[in-house]
Length: 189
Image 1 (cartoon, one colour):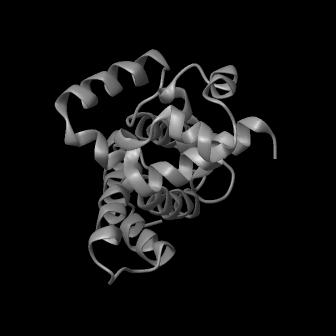
Image 2 (cartoon, rainbow, N blue to C red):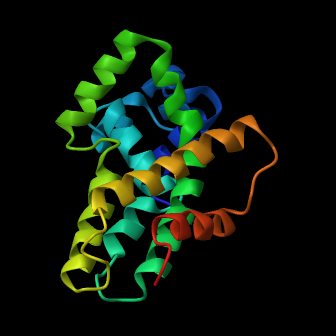
């Protein structure tokens, strides 16, 4: 494991345990076994570390969305896989991001920093909706379907499940739940 990966692994652990707000670059560097200066050789700022944690250390929602190929596998199967992965992703990321809402100043600063990095929480919804539009063009999704609504409903439900998994110990298997959610937005096929 290289320096960058060690830093991301340490950041993931600290952010999961203490949230983003309390994870300092000094503490992340110490936990990774490096100086804070070494951390800044690999990451421009804490926001870049956060993006690295979200994109490479948590269940692979970003990678899965990137691998979606219109016309490959069934639309239903693709949506079930994406939704189940999203449930796992939001379950893992919820404790990290929740602390951002503890301070309006922190949230405002984080929003601005995320925008500067070209990232944000709308990205998965946009990417999924774009995939669904491509499937519509191929005739594999009815022209009456609303790709933006389907993407928002599935990923919104996955986000809610991520929250509920931390609140309530009675949770359903992500794949089973994903099948039910997809069936609700694609009732026939």
